[in-house]
Length: 202
Image (cartoon, helix red, strand yellow):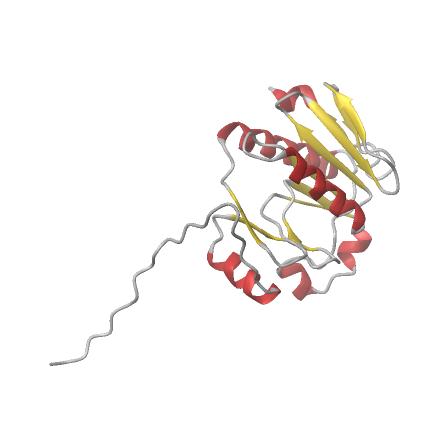
């Protein structure tokens, strides 16, 4: 009887919320490569974090935020390099994060080799935006924002559409909380960049 090779069947593994998986940097990159449709991150301690897919309203707001950031660079004389939510960053503390929108200065981008630009970027964004979705824990997002600041970010916005609140994180300063602001300024980090939140909320 001739031998016939059979490919193993792929099974889905579901884990309780209180169970974590530890993966190395190399293992994480392999998992992320074969699961491109998932939003996967890795904590500084090596814990694998799988985020649920973005819902319709959050995805709609996300793409508008990215559009305004790109428009500032392409049409309004802004500098630097913007990134969308699928871009991975290897932070100095060992975590792998994918902000909803982010930006590097032209100098930091130019310092990366062609190989480093192709994979997970071995740097922390200079500017980062996290947009809270209904399934996101506010505390976890606040800790994530602080992690960006501790690893070299200069400015960060945590946008919370649920109550139209924005937390602004600045390097070396206490966070500032704004209630229902109409606009956000890139300040001296992204001079001239203004995000019209009325268009994001809608």
